[in-house]
Length: 301
Image (cartoon, rainbow, N blue to C red; front, side, top):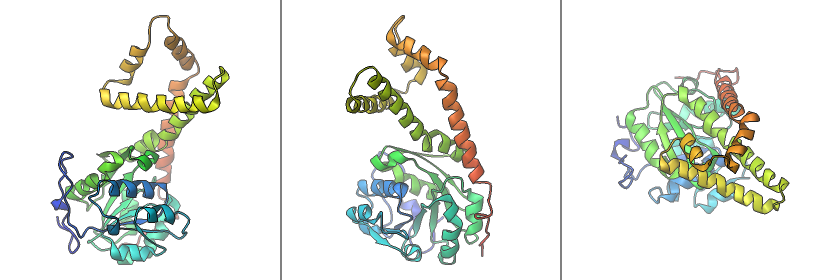
């Protein structure tokens, strides 16, 4: 499928070992200038395949504009300007603002556009109901480490989004971290696991450092070592391909310090509490997607 007018998404290469190739007419817009928009924009530009002149960001406040301008990206207060000048648009606003934002721009959305929503809990059905019939929509859930190009991103395609649309998005986002496509039912789970999960990791890192402070280590050093411990453990887990339980067992020696510490963690219910946290965060994301009145507007033409 070729979206009439702007670009041919089939021109890109999706093999991660080959350079990204795409139509030079591709223009990327962001409605919303928060952390997720900034992290994605920074990743897109890092590869060098997307020039800053091909990106535009809109937001009602100029508060976050400086960091985008430092990337060489154009900024505006007009969402309509973004829609008129861009063909792939990330809707990166809070979930409760989605209906109002799309309600203003929907009259300008055509089949030339690809709309990518990063709003937690807002379903593809809801998004498609807020946009003209036949609109190409994808739903993306990134996480905060996109800011340092170590994100975990999962996306799903809407009714009219073709495999080449997903391939385009995947190729664009690869510099941001791990990018996967899956059914929409996984998006809310990903929100609990990875979107909210980074906060769970930060809580653990904080507790790890505070334990060291309790035992007499200076706070700054304890937090620095805790951060490096989380980073190193995560990289080893990712790169080794081993199950976490296997790596955990490799640290333990009979009667040693680690097994005693793990026993204390199990007594404290760390495993169960973490699983419950992912479950509750997932259910909250699902609640956000159950079409509350401020999102359930139908603007299809």
